[in-house]
Image 1 (tube, rainbow, N blue to C red):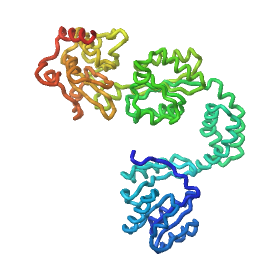
Image 2: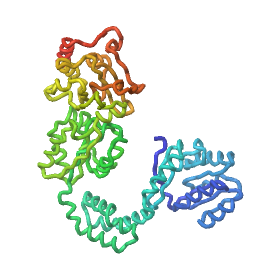
Image 3: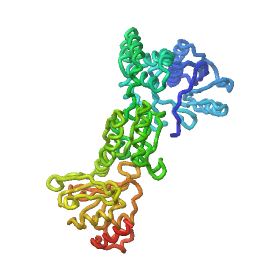
Image 4: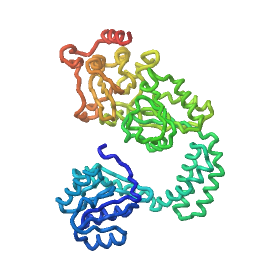
Length: 494
């Protein structure tokens, strides 16, 4: 972020607009919306500029630019076709550390003007750092369409109520709950409809019932964050993140997801990065209950989907046992997201009729799966958390009758900017993982391939043949035998 967005207080400050044509008129229209004193530097103003300046009370400084014209000035807009004049004003403003915007000349500017949605005092600024102003305007138009024209009047009325609400409700959490009810419910509707009397009655009713907000106000939401790409968050997940007072987050959730949360929400990391070695499930359950018991809205944010190897059942049971309400917000699980990211169909008519999702690890090591069913032709599956135990998994599959030539697709950091995709065969998988280490979270797809669907793999796919499994093309010329896999299994397990 090169340009940091902020709002500058211009009350009783001086703003200069330099120019005499249409662009100067545009900047003057923008400036007079503020509470600043406006000065216009121009030679001969256009009729429209002169009329607008007179109507708004702006002072016109006729004649050539003088450095003294910038005395006591906070902001400068330069909107002139005279490049020499623009450069002179820019130099003087920079010398004095006065913020300046030169129209269509970012290199001479110290700030840029965003596209604005004005519902004073609600103002939404949309910027592209000067790279795509048309896109910024399109985004502004989209926002304009969803914000009521009288939204500013709601904000002004809320400001008038602030002292009354603070006096009536001392507890900050309850006060925030009250504001949420006012600004999202009947009071806002009454204000938008110009029914001030009805709005006043709603305020009195809500304040009188504020004690009810304290009863059982704590709540836990188990929210699926998806595989990592924030664009894959569900609308409900975004809503819960905006409502959350506390977010208890897994280590696999990317920081980009937190951009959708309230800035003042408290973050508790429950993954390997946060609690030292790791936080056990009992500790996480205790945190959820403890925070919700304080009346907080708690989001337990998990990678993927809470119900797919996410221990959501254990957390639900603990929270419900404490008498705290809990809801589940599903997320896009990694298998579906990774497959979609690389264009890999999970089922194929007449070829792949079953698709399973299995875990590659348990507390005791390799899981006790139905290996014969997984090895059966036409049954494809995705393995979560299977990189470390891959040799053991391969050994069990081959022993159950799976072919060593079964296709395997590895997706590391799926849907993220650093996504990596490897294509190989089942028998070569242990050596592939040794010669081409996987460091990020990964999903292993077994029995799926693009060829079977008459599709081409993405160009970024790393095609690793058995002869390339160690990366040198010589050490491994064939798929591993079951005996070799057993040896590798013993080595990994030890």
